[in-house]
Length: 148
Image (cartoon, rainbow, N blue to C red):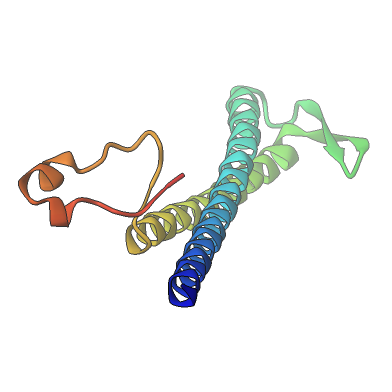
């Protein structure tokens, strides 16, 4: 009768709540992944720029300090000497290294946060193996959670 229908309705609502919760968790994890990817891309860009500074620095190190060289400053090509440009190039290189290290620290922290989030909410990615050994020993301890 009516009691069975009410029970089914409550179960259906519970399943919908669970599905909405799962979708919310997946969305949060996806946002964290995207932030992590953006950090990784920025690190790559800065590392490439730093590497260009290393090449310029190594080249200028071999030249006479009074030799004429050109440097782009704010979109304007300026004529300088190696003695004035080399310290600026090395300073920029050091600053890039510091920013890269800071971003790398943030990336590591973000990845740890993602792992903690996955662990807390029992989320496994499709390419992560299930813990089948625990399930084989005790079906009550079989992993339950969300697959992304």
